[in-house]
Amino acid sequence: MNPALAPLFARRSIRQYQAKPVPDPVIQDVIEAAMAAPSANAKDPWEIIVVRKPETLAQIAAGLPYGKMLGHAPVGFVVCGNLQRVNGQHLSYLLQDCSACIENLLLALSMLGLGGVWLGVHPREDRIAHLKQLFHLPEEIIPIGVISAGYPAETPPPRTRFNAAHLHHEQW
Image 1 (cartoon, rainbow, N blue to C red):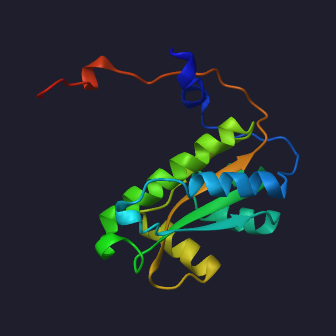
Image 2 (image 1 turned 180 degrees about the vertical axis):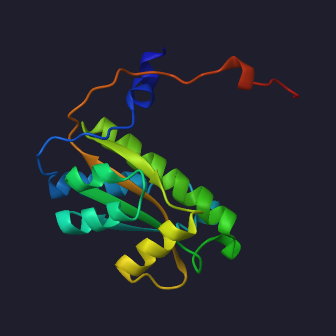
């Protein structure tokens, strides 16, 4: 494993958190890193809702079948995309841009000593509707994913998921 890539391999899905709040400056750093993601035609269609209230985190978790850890997380991030601001108003670009934003957010968490897990929302209509209703989202705002985050209470080892069978050179 190349040591220069250690932050990438160290990022793991963290579902258990210490009962320790995440300071505002750290959250700001994470958001700024998330919004440094590439975006088609630099449209930056992402919208991020930072959630700290335990009751709101529990309400989010109630609509995400695999999101129970949100009820014990110090912070959650709801990453949405704005269809009016995305390149050409194409849903595909919105999904790509917001996914890059989410990956940057997850890497920033890991690099700052926090952990998080990406909970998929889009394209599950029930999950989308749950978050739209909970946060009173306008029609053009589509929730893409939720990130549960905090200081890790577990430490999985760094790893790669490299599989040579999925690598192709020059042609299939």
